[in-house]
Length: 354
Image (cartoon, rainbow, N blue to C red; front, side, top):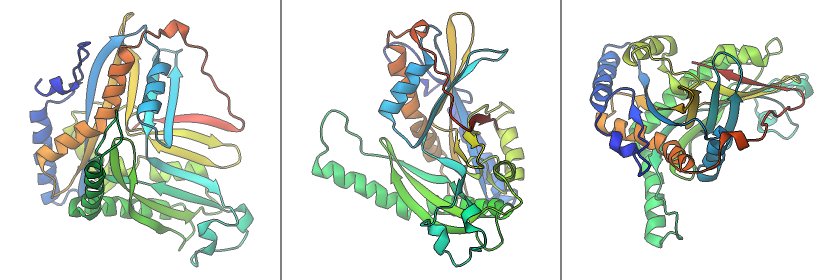
């Protein structure tokens, strides 16, 4: 497969795309045709990159490498060792899918004129923070950046902020999530306090919007999940028809945990879920090897260029690929890994597959 060399290091661990670059570009052309026919406004096309590594390596160590190389607010690690389908997830997600939190007296929502102040002490607010729009940072790891490099990084931020395509992608998903939240929030409370702001991480800049509303009295965190899942930033709009098209284009290969959500649901009614992106999913291939899968992709609109979209897919996978490469050269073994089962009071961990 051409371009597999992009994921190869001296240790000869190579990630191979599930669908070749040529096939991926053909998929993008099909997306354009479906959009032209009015079947969708935006299609979030993805691919799976796969490799095998020694099963003697500890998945927990991979997660530690990810945390060090790509620190993000919604990282997570899970290791299901027992059962018929053991797997481990090392997730470095920067994206909140949806949260349900008890309102604080000083929260922004308490000043929103659209909110009903009745029983405010018992109110919960719902928040979604979709990411649409990504560009590479000017990264230097071995020294401080020069003035010209800092200026280049700022130029990339401005370019991302003003890109018509990225703004269109973001706005369509904001509208989709406003619709989702209106199904579980009080009438008139859903609003967008932050639209298309840039958040910067170690390797990328990303365009992020925030949608909030007050949870209806007869709704719960589970209702929010049912109304919003799967995350619109990983499907496109309209959601159901876009998923049908994507299922065909992605050759009915399951995304697995990738593009689903991972987080907690608390007994006090709170919840916080991420979108499972920038993640490695590890499953035993045989007694000697882990099968490592990394999902990546991007939103296709009428303004998308096939080469740019393929490069964006590689960019989103790069931090995880490089972490796996570093992890594979680490001598830390799985049998040295201490127990990582952590019990949190009043919380349960949840993984939802797409």
